[in-house]
Length: 145
Image (cartoon, rainbow, N blue to C red; front, side, top):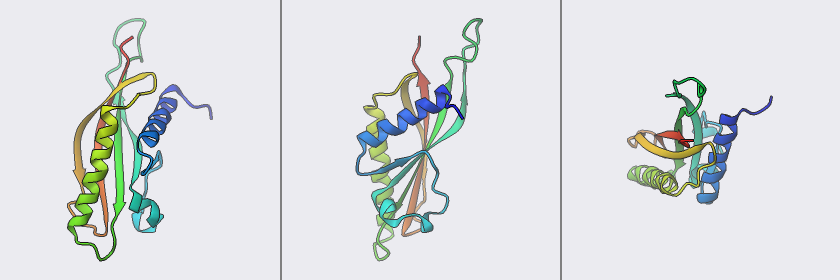
């Protein structure tokens, strides 16, 4: 299957984030079962980039289907030592979140995108110790050309 421009750009975002965060694992595939995922990767922090749709395309003749935004979910997973305090999960989640936010401030976004604006985020609330997770919504915007 031939990649489309949006898929290619999302792969560019993955590569950009992986280059900026070399101590993390950045991928496009969602981790579906953290307890059965590679523990060494989870200890580093796994960042999964998942497209959640988009919209807000240009609505004038000649630009139909252009300039649309993409809703990008950044889903991060972490693991702390089994005997670590429960609060260590929260600290690991917040560290992962702030690494992603550092990337947002200095992305070098691949074309056709211009910026990634952070929106709401959620975290595990320490409920799944020794595993944790965050979800950050990013509004990825196109270049205004």
